[in-house]
Image (cartoon, rainbow, N blue to C red; front, side, top):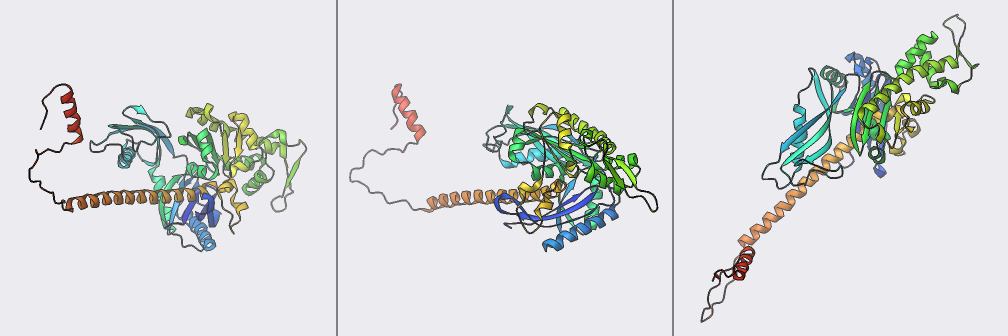
Length: 455
């Protein structure tokens, strides 16, 4: 299908969002419809109650289906949570003698072998990302694919992302209970990166920080290769809970205070600014100091960003982030979070939104450009890229078959072709034997060095 329709399902801690899209003009994504509902039964990116989560998924999917007029069956699902881990590994294979050069099947075999590495009990592999390739112990530059290089041994360094098997099964059960089939599972920061970064960012070096409700996801790219991933168990909900406890108010009031009046810097608010919160029943309104509110938000946000900075330092690429830090997710809309991130990470920082990858349609693009939708839109982009890659590989395979078929047909024509009749002279001359090019060179050298001539 030339313009396949892809569905992305973002199962977050605070929201579940479903997006239906296809490839639009200028390689952008055209969102045909989307649905969003409160996430129930999910904590820190992990499905705790399968039935409750399934019902939330069903509501979001129905809304997206009605808006897009598309019957939804297959979905690409984002995965996050503190059960996500990553590690590095090195793999190596010998190239078969019949392969004159490394072929795609050799590369696929090397990557597939990584799925057989020894894991901790209860872990399964989500992604295998090649980092650096070596052919006969010679490192290839990032611009050179190993496919087509002549060699006897192919070796590579890999970044491998794993998750807890039970948690993955819970996600699968919740999605299937909603009447859907999982097309693939994608680490959420990988999806978000597709929605808010471009090739220039990933080539120059960039740290993507997706601040959601239950987790903060970090993905570091350099030379268009993902170098480091991490999922931190602190995010927007922790800030909301701090406000609720610190100000002695309800959770929904705390969330409203955070999004409407909150700031990550105490210096950005006046000492005498006061917010009045309606009291419960007959109680008098509660007055909240904006200075105190900013202090609560600053303390928790600083803790989150310090852990992000630790992950950047741990990656070994802290000095190579020319494109700096990109904040996305719902938490990226906190006022002055950009300035605080620059203070803590000592890197240029910007807020990443998916609007540059969106085609203007009847769906409100202003709403979709919110950072909280980066993961869902990125899942659609991931699915589109996979579908297009599969079509390209199939087309190349067919082209190769056609090439060899034509060569075989030409060879058979030459075999079936009858030899032309030869004229015989009355006095036959001395018969000469035809000489191949390599024999001609040998004969020339024999004559040159005085060897016997051949008839």
